[in-house]
Image (cartoon, rainbow, N blue to C red):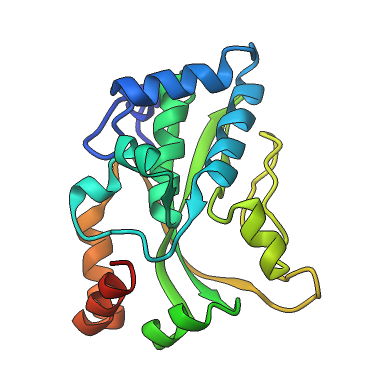
Length: 214
């Protein structure tokens, strides 16, 4: 259910857009732009490329998902990067919310695939930004360097069209398949995500991921 737009501008425990570091970074990235679309693009590409994708980033405590913490750390996995983009967007007056989907990931992430024991990723996280009268999907997960190293087609964002993962890589091979949509959220549903992971993977996988990121 859609909430009033002003709800998607408010700070939350995870999307802490009221913190000083988030405000300063958002201002730094957008102070030369006047149009909302241009601001949104600047924020998207910052999160996509300057916040490096790390699938082993700490993810076990609520503070691991605070936008200000993710900004300070300079890396994160899909959910964390989506939280940061939402916080930056809300700071400059762009309504932003989180969206989640289950995906199948066919990319050659050897160590990660071995730990997971499956290519099903539950609750992959991305964003929806409200720009010029409509919600637009934005997926800042994979940074450009990672895409170039792994033959991944990078997600581009023009603030007009939905920007989600491409289904195939640069060689025409299947890379991502969307399986199940969980809808959109005003705040990070951390308990829901953790419960879904426990059901999908079991406690042992969570512990192995924790050790891999140590």
